[in-house]
Image (cartoon, rainbow, N blue to C red; front, side, top):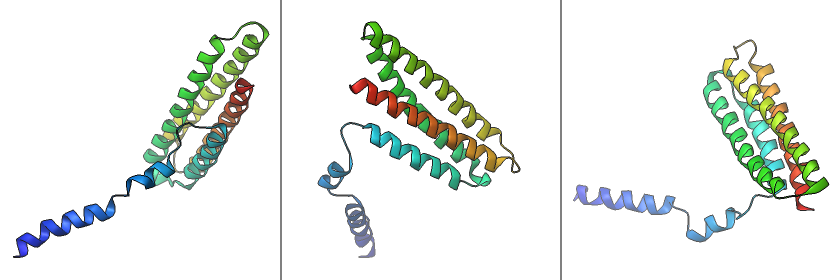
Length: 148
C-alpha cells in the first residue's frame, strides 16, 4: 500500500509545482524593448554587486551572459545599419562603433572580475557594473535612434 502512495504524491507535487499555461504567457514579452534593456542593466549591475568573492565563478558567468545578450542585440542593430544609406548610415555606423568599444570594455571588466582576488573583488564588481550600465545605456540610445 505504501508503494502505491509514493508515485501519486510525486505526480501531485509535480503538477502543483508546474505553473498553469496562461501564467507563463503573461510573464513573457514577444519583443525586448529598450526599456527592458535598461531595466536588465540595472538588475544585472545589482546582481553582480550582490555576489561575494566566494561566488566569483557565478558572478563571472552572469556577467558574461549579460554581455553576450547585449552583443546579440548590437549585431541586430548592425544589420539594420547596413541597410541604411547616406548620412543616416554614417551616423548609425558611428553608434555601432561606440557600442562595440563599450562592449569590449564590459567584456574586459568581466574578465577582470574572473581574475579578481579577495582584495580587489569589490573594485572589480563595481568596474563591471559601471561598464555594463554604460554599454546598456548606449545601446538604449542607439536603439531609440534606429526607431526614428
